[in-house]
Image (tube, rainbow, N blue to C red; front, top):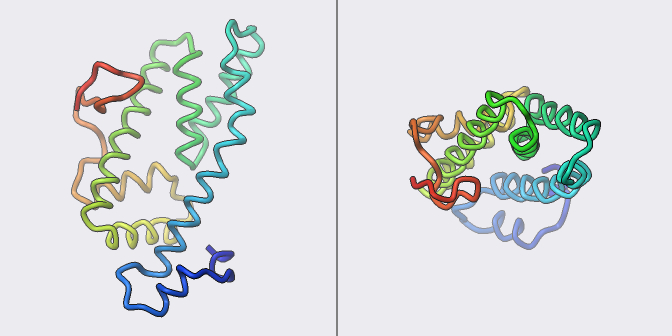
Length: 176
């Protein structure tokens, strides 16, 4: 956001000069988080590609599971949480752990859909709440922030029992 504030941008200039419905700060935040999301994915290939090999040697499997559990349980960024949970779901021998990883993925699908609905209903209010949670709470995780934003928009932060996202590639027969 600081870098975007220092850079010349035709879009930012137009927003600053016009009576726009979009705030300059909201625009910078959206753009900055989009850049971050795009930059975060390529390094994950160093983990996901070696952990996809079939068959996986026992030492590699143990390493992949260790890294996946760290990503899932100690990351504050959802994309890393999700990579970790997906690897655990695929490689763990513990049914309980696989079920927990599936529940984690299912909750994120729910949060994503509700977050999109909240944004479409009132993008300005959603962006202001997003900025508040991002900057006001120093130790907030992205998942915690999403739960809060969804709850503030009037949705339950967890999916109802039996809910599955329609068209979910991990559960193709499920319906909403």
